[in-house]
Amino acid sequence: MSVPAARRLTALVFGGACFLCRGAAAGLLCPACDADLPRLRGPLCPRCALATPAGEVCGRCLARAPHYDATVAALAYRFPADVLVQALKFQGELALAPLLGELLAAAVAAAPPGRVDAVVPVPLSPRRLAARGANQAMELARPAARAAGARLDPDLCERVRDTPAQVGLPHDERAANVRGAFACPRLAAGLSIAIVDDVMTTGATLEEIARELKAAGAERVVNWVVARTPPPEAAP
Image (cartoon, helix red, strand yellow):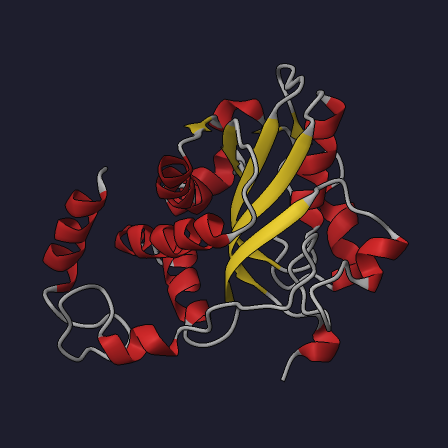
């Protein structure tokens, strides 16, 4: 769906009311609520998008380098961004996808340039896809891929093991929960790949997918996420 078509659909669905405050709005959000979005700005670790004093690689990534090479995030995962993401993810508000996808595309455009050959949305298991009715990562990946001029390639990585949802799991259990949950059915030799997801918390899911893509021959893997959650000690 093109951006103008998506905006027309949004206007039709929400009838000129701001999704957050229900006040008058020409688009999905009124100007005040749009201004309240916690847009993520530096200095940030270029590898994982957590805050660092001067935009250098953070201590976590230095101590244990992840398989992904960079992360681009549009928003901090706090109010009102969390309301929008949760409505898309758990309430089936697909009309929110163009807004969040455009925010992600803008963050990608503002990031340091780099070649991206393929965009891969985080895959869902068949059971979870049936329960939700759509893969929110796929809906976010469409505008991001289009803006980056890269091909959308959802078949490059597949989910081969259903797992409990990461939400609610302790941080130190999330990596084990997704270990072995993904596979690449074909080679990705020499490709530069962007993985798209809605929220990055510990990065365990993105790390596992990056591990598989690198094993399949990918040259570079970056994360494109709508929202980044701060570590527990940094949360207000």
